Length: 334
Image 1 (cartoon, helix red, strand yellow):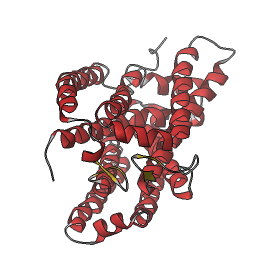
Image 2 (cartoon, rainbow, N blue to C red; image 1 turned 180 degrees about the vertical axis):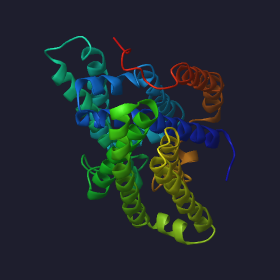
Image 3 (tube, helix red, strand yellow; image 1 turned 120 degrees about the horizontal axis):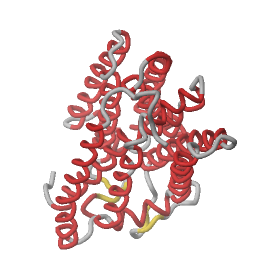
């Protein structure tokens, strides 16, 4: 393992992506669950639970994408043409979702339309993120430092499976978030949803994990040969502990623990992906160091990151602290 500027920046990009997934994941998951609310009042409570933080959660997507462009330009130049369609669809879905968040409070006649846009934008954004992940895992064809595949190489049974897995997983995070942030009927309904979504998420993670080693011989070798298998053994052990805590805390009707256990499941899954990818920035052929910008550029950008990342973490933590506790159904976003 080489600990240098390129490695540090790869860690920062990975951290930004992971932070986006665990923060905006429950946010999108709430939108995926939106049609299943029993009343408009329940939908208002659901939306109010993320009203103070939803736009700040997406900061990490900008940081991850912008960082990739600035410090790993070759990776950006390869990944974008390979994933134009899912990325553009994801961004359009996020736009519709953001607009619906603002507009649904301003109208009565068109509220159902904006509710549908909120659900559709959340679901399509999550699906496209999962499809993009699946396309990366299965590998991107590269020739002479450029994308050499076709327009629809990203669309395969494996990428569709990962897309569905992300949608279900985000819905799980959304349900666990609402268990923590609401009370009464909404909480009871989401607690019931969380049990089924937890089982479905873990089942899909298992299927994807079984298929991943066969997407590329490198994955197979790393997962089942020493010393790589020593790392991969830790992932299922941690997953078992988190699974036990998730279902046990739901059964005990705890409010906070199911959410943090669900976040842990996502973090451990992300670690598993990282073990498979490293040291590739664009699997299966472009490494972190091949994709990195010159050290002078990496060092200059790192100065800004050292200032901005703690600042973003600070105001994000402060926002969650200020709006901690249960949502009051009588108050909210207007």
